[in-house]
Image (cartoon, rainbow, N blue to C red; front, top):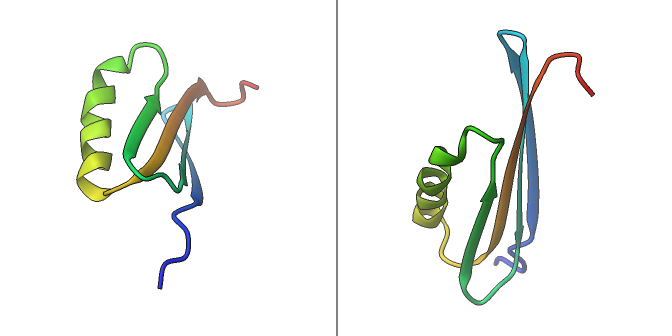
Length: 74
């Protein structure tokens, strides 16, 4: 039986001289609340990503973020 909807996931990938870090967090919530933060210039993907998450989740507060940077920066 599921006791909690709390979770955290992080993935990192590098390709073509760029590094991408994606994080997803979820906490228990009575309703579905999806928030996505993307790097400047990728804002057009925000609604598509929200739609994908809403299609897989029924409830909870879901926060997603992505960071894109040249490899070796920061």
